[in-house]
Image (cartoon, rainbow, N blue to C red):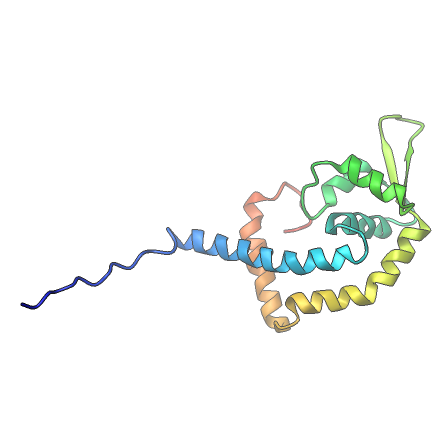
Length: 162
């Protein structure tokens, strides 16, 4: 007697194309984040701390109010005060309260912070090359268009990221 077996039903890996795309973005972020964490650990910084220094250098010679700085960060920082405390303890930034409004704090990069960014500049190029250097300029531009399109409805009004 011949026993017939039914072929196994294929299980769907994803519930929708949107889910598949989202999970691909998440997986890509995780792979790139692993490289990021290793790179910034060499400098005893987090990526978010580096981003603060980068934004403050761009604001030179002036400083930047804390709230304006928070609004320009790449990703949300739940404890900005503690992050700034760490940078200040390393003398990479300084904070000053304004005389006009004591609640307002102006954050500035110090010369030590600028020197650190200068020293990091070349290794940072290598870091980005390790992350995405395998892609052509055309592919990178196309990816940026798609990422901006995906993010646009979720960005706040006036965001510089769209």
